[in-house]
Length: 293
Length: 233
Image (tube, rainbow over all chains, first blue to last red; front, side, top):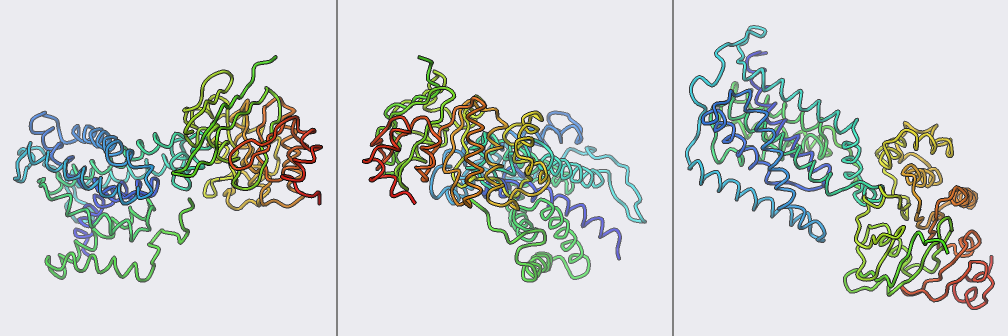
């Protein structure tokens, strides 16, 4: 087993996982697919670079700021793309379309501000030190990607499982009407859920930009399908499923590039995900239980 | 005369083009048990949902303890002492029994009181609420409302789908709630049973109140009995 490739797969997989966890959180709690999520990922990459380049922050100080910016974007998404449509009988489909529209606007604003070209972090933004792990070389950024993903995933798991807000989220996921009856402010739960989801997606975007030292307007659409595939394979609405699914996709991609060839990357990676679904249609961590509403 | 805890004046509720409630007026005195009875589709649940803030009325005015709550959302009403036990119980089956109670109130004390009243819930506190029997789920739904320490509790068809023995138990609990000073508005298809428990009754048909009066008088009124309560079985 090639340790270097295994680690590389885990690093890129962590970013997919972080992106997918945010994606699936909204799907699980609010029963909505938020297609503005990839745009938040992209915005965060550009904002991260600007914070370092113009703001003079270190990449580590930029991350919490990106987290907050993502959260604010989540509030905007909830207010603009989802809340006005919530009473409609076609709210699912309407929300899907309006979130795509909002995503388009976010990207247009990025293009207006930064132009169409690839942006990079300024030279010397990244620490020079590399670490030896089991004979493989890893950078500080890579270690941070893995740690941050683990911390955020565990934090979210505890939030959902142990806190009052988490109980409200699970109650809303199961039955929004019943949640309202017992006094839960479902609008506030929705806004908070989108804020948390978008904060995670934003951190994923900034980490992605750091990992490859570039941000492009199209980076969101590239990860969008991967995120969707990951949440389907993990089991719709399963947070552990999104984590494991993201890591698996990262590993599959890296090993395909290494042993078969880079042009086979998507074919093999998505082919594997397809096979998992054939063997386990409900996804890795999914249940067959139908939503009760 | 004591101040009324609940007044509903000319309430109208519609869903699209269907007018479910057409100008209903009723009231409840503090500590009383008021019941709304009538056939399926008479508008009983719509009235309850409008009072509890789950449905926005099309017209009319609702006051709770003297304050206008016509457009107050449910979560604010729960916090201010008005709570609903919905039709079909609506417990959250994927959460544990204790988590269901915590949704109502994070306070330990209220939950301890509910466990005292319903020891079976204390026994099953760590189980998923979906695994409870129908009767236990109804007790959980009532307990979940009681942890909020309401001054007015709205019960929507609490005996629906339960075995006769469990129905007795539910009515026993309703009596206790009322005895503790909490005002109860009870909606029931089991009209005779509800009227026996109530102080005051309103008979609904087609979204309107067609009879009202002290519950005992309604039970003795031949017109009401023949038209709405059916033959005693």
